[in-house]
Image (cartoon, rainbow, N blue to C red):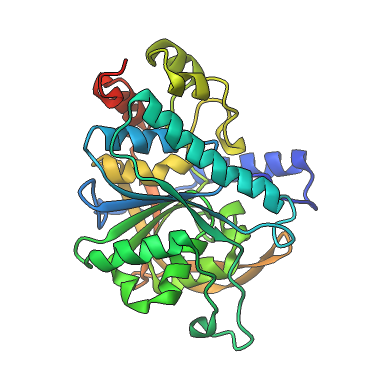
Length: 338
């Protein structure tokens, strides 16, 4: 998830506004909710999709899979590009795709096992049809789309495929457009949006995909408002990783802009799969209307107990910060190489 937004907002104004949003989300009183039970756990099959290849979650998922504690079925890289996303040229995004393949290669060289081969996801964004009807939307298709279709068809509504997403919602929706029968056989665990809308970078990159996911699919949204991201610091990696290719890659890595030096916003969906008790409260929502956000029409939602989509409103921050350390501290992840 790359959080740099294009003009017209100056960078300083964007940072200040983002800080105010986070502060207001943290301080605003929320109605008391009962404990929320996710429709998945670590026994569900998982596919991971992201855009930029500079997050710790890639390494966390490989480490958990290496321990045999995750049914890791696929890795894809997807995003819209310029001109719809002015700040992301096609050549730059192609480097993200090759960068994710490099991450897997380095992970395996460090000892990670049970890691699937990455495939190319969707390049582009879904275009609203002239009719305005979801069912008239033309899919894009990609190798990653086909991977999701195959995995979802093997899954069931009771034991669905979980797609952990740190970028736009395009590829999951693309698979649905190819085969509507998979709608209840997959759950999208997505970092993106806000407490009352889908207005952040990840939603902005493909707002029509966001609208379809909100309206038709089993969407679990982890808003970027709360500062409750998992992650480990560069100092912790230096002190606790063995001297291997993974450490050599991660220590100098410049993380996604939202994360600073120590956090991993895109890791929230992955932690929800691997860590019981991480998600504490949530609300159901449904589509409410459209708002303009940095030149794109964005879907908003309203609280709706009958809504299919779910927005996470509270997590256990202690678990969020300890989950990465627990896994990365286990020498078994390196398969005896270190």
